[in-house]
Image (cartoon, rainbow, N blue to C red; front, side):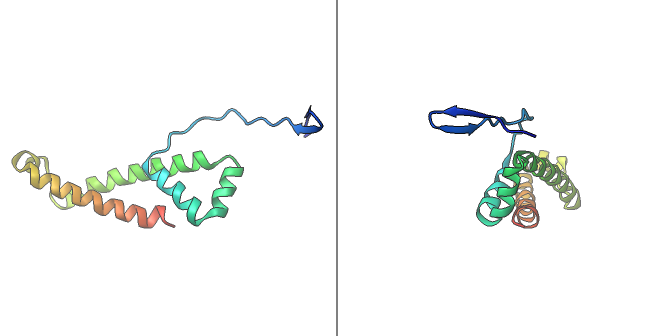
Length: 116
């Protein structure tokens, strides 16, 4: 592999080009992981950045954890008998219980997947 250069004034600058890659949307959990990597796992962050794998890595984490969150919400709602019937009969109680489940699951996901 050879590198070509362009002369600019007295300097030779390498002709660098980035590959055309798929762009990834990064959601809540991907952004949280990004902040954690920047502050606490600088080596991993730099390595992923240099290999041009950071966006894909964060996107994969985000997708995986969003799916996990949804499946755990459904599982806990069934386990705690939070049904559509409860939603129809006592909407405020249903909202409170669902928010409680969502908060517990988010805490688990942050502790076990983001902050490691």
